[in-house]
Image 1 (cartoon, helix red, strand yellow):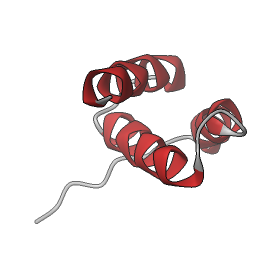
Image 2 (tube, helix red, strand yellow):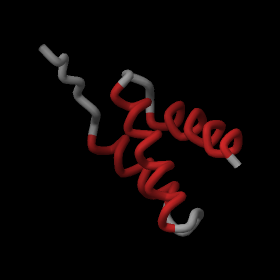
Image 3 (cartoon, one colour):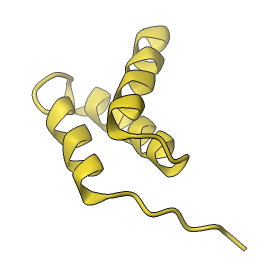
Image 4 (spheres, one colour):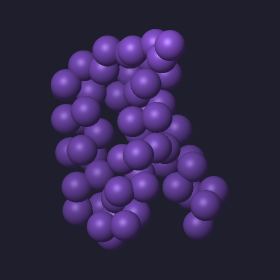
Length: 60
């Protein structure tokens, strides 16, 4: 049985707004996927953005 996690819509909006016009389309998609993973873990939007940015920079 999978546990469902509530992610506030405002968190998703913040993540999408941050990624807009910053990355290429492929990079943006990977960044958004990473953010959604962290959001599902229960962190705030700002924390998800920061951790995803670290992931992005490490993968460069």
